Image (cartoon, rainbow, N blue to C red; front, side, top):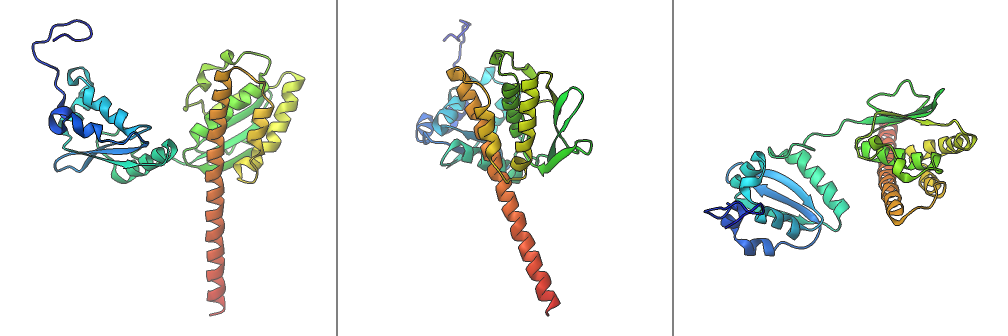
Length: 277
C-alpha cells in the first residue's frame, strides 16, 4: 500500500473510528446541518462540533489517516466510544446550538468557545485624522458608545468592511486592508475623511449608527449597501454576507431590548404591589 506521497506502507493506516463503528454507521448520518458530540467511555462528552452537512463532516473523521493527524486529534479519535448528533434547521442554528453546548459542557478537547465571551462596547468619535470606530472592554474616551454586547466582534468586523467600501468607493475592493479581512479586526480603526465626499458620507453614517446599535432602526444596513458601488459577483456576495451578519446582530439587540423592557415592567409591577400591600 502506498500513501499520497508514494511512501510504501507495510500496514494500512490506522482509522480508529472505522474500526470501532464501521463505515455503515457514518453512512446513516443525515446530510443536514447540525451538531455532533463525541463521547468517551466514562468521561462523557469529549468534543462538540457543528457541521453544514453532518454526514460529510463525520466522514472526514472516518477517512482521516490517524498517523498524519495532530497529536491532540489522534488522542481524541482513540478515546471516542460514542457519537451522537442533533439535527438543526440551518447552519446558523447549528452554530448557536454548538455555542450553547460548549458553554454548558466545556469538553476537554475543545479549545475555543468553552467560556463566555466578555461583553464589549462599540464606540465612535471624530478625530483630527477622520472617523474613529472602536470595540473594547470600555470605551469611555469615545464621544458615542453603545453596549455592552456579547459576541460583538464578527458584527464589528462586518461593519468596518462595509464602511470602508462606502468611504473608498473610488478604489478596487482588492485594496481592502488585510487587517479587516477576518473576524478579529483591530480594536480601533480610523477612517480617513480628507475628501469632501468622504466627510459627507461619514456625517451620514454617524446619523445611522446610534439607531442601529440601540436597536431602534435597521436603516444603517440599507444605507451601507446603497452607498457603496456595485461590484463583481464575488464582491456582491461578500457584501451580502457582511450585511446578513449585521442583520442577525440587530435581531439580538432587539431581543435584548424586549427582555430588558419586560424585566423593567415586572420590577415596576412588583414595586406597585409592595407599595399597595
